[in-house]
Amino acid sequence: MGIRLIVLLFASIVLMVLDHRQNHLGAVRQAIGAAVYPLQVIVDAPFRLWEWVRDGTADRNQLQLEMSRLQAERLLTNARLQRMTALEAENARLRDLLEARAQVRDEVRVAEIMAVDANPYRHNIVIDIGELEGAYDGQSIVDVTGVIGQIIETGLTTSQAMLISDPSHSLPVEVNRNGLRTIANGTGEFGRLVLPFVTNNADIRPGDLLVTSGLGGAFPAGYPVAVIDTVNRIPQEPFADVTATPAAALDQVREVMLIWSSAEPRDKKPGDEEPNDE
Amino acid sequence: MSRAGRSGRLPVILTIIVSLMLMVMPLPDWAIPFRPDWVALALIYWAMMLPRTWSVGTAWLIGIVLDVAQGTILGQHALALCFIVFITVRFHLLMRVFPMQQLTATVFAILALYQFVLFWINGVAGVDAPLVNYWGPVITGTLFWPVVSLLLSSVRLRVHHGR
Image: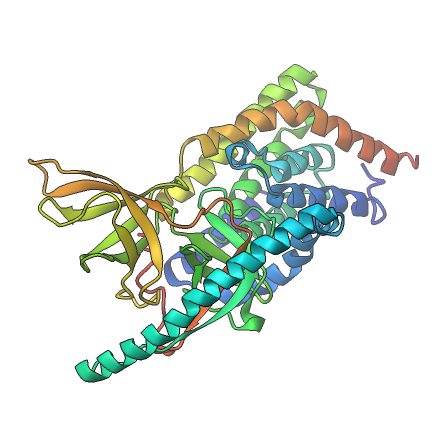
């Protein structure tokens, strides 16, 4: 009994070292994850059912309201899209003039967040797309309003993703107005990011939109991340105290989009840079 | 105890599966730190009552499954569960004759130890989490213990006395 305990404790420590320091155990995790998947589905099922029932029994008025809202929204987005094609063409032409690499469009796919709670110590979510559908480690996840996070672990049919609000997540961003590059860190609160490395004399002010800069290699460039909240310049400190509110409602979304960005080289492993756990 | 044959195992496995499901069940954000450690509670009970069948080996396997389900470091919960189950098996004769208050206090101590092991591993691995994530489950786990042990003992009696 005592010997067995010692052997098992030793085995756990070896596992932890292999898993945490070397990341060698992806296959093991996947195999056990496949066994856990039915449990997650069972837990998720009542929530799916509830949603299905709610959709099925929505009354006529509500449906009509919803439909007219969606139609209005579609008109609006279509109008915007028209301008967008023109802009895209113009952008490509200008880029040609500048001899810059043309930006390639990203491929997108909708995933649903499963009603399953993941790691209690981190801001993680479980989504219903896994390796079978082509998800990969480090893949970026956005919703309609902004960046949500990135995949940190793929299973066969589900994946775990880390939100940008996780305290160990860092994201290379730039200020949309002037291209100032910096890093946005999570804080552990859904509604707040911090920018720890903004110098006191940097041109940044509340209301500025932060977008991904694409420099880390993990996220494609140009997706909105957050809006600057407060800028507190402290004369005796090297860096200002800057906080931002994520553009996406991280704790409220149900549908997210996975991005396969074709502009990135596939062979290099994304996510080498972040998450930056020490 | 000796009647805990193959037929007696299935209900125990079912209770553990239910406890695993409770561990991944979604809760509102404010309640997440206060999710009791259902798996730890169930394993403490079974290790106390059926220490020959449910011991450190099973605890370790279940811990690995829990680690995968929650995406924590592989081996973290395995080590912690193994450790508390060992202690429970060590003192199972003593714990069985404790009155409920005293038993609950013991479970409180065991759960605190469990969270401390998790906390310590997170500290070594550099996972930074608010402290309430550690003491929250200890408090709620202790509060839920009398209910859990009543439920599990009804399962146990039904199996072992064929009712």
